[in-house]
Length: 105
Picture (cartoon, rainbow, N blue to C red):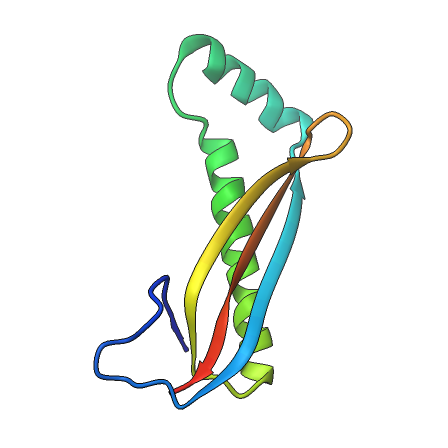
């Protein structure tokens, strides 16, 4: 499956547009990550715990999006976009959405 943020693929014309596909993942921050993040925030630097959570959530959202495209018979997803949103009463949850256009090349 070809997955790209571009709206076209050089040398690969789109034969059929199959529709929008997406994947959504919501992850919660746990107490241990919050403690390490607060220490990192105080001392400066990057928060590896949060970064890995975001990377994992993005990968899961992409997998869901790809599975949706496969069910439609697509062999590529074009114009992929990622959105990140903090949700929940205390902002303790992160939502990662991946969406794009499923196509047959």
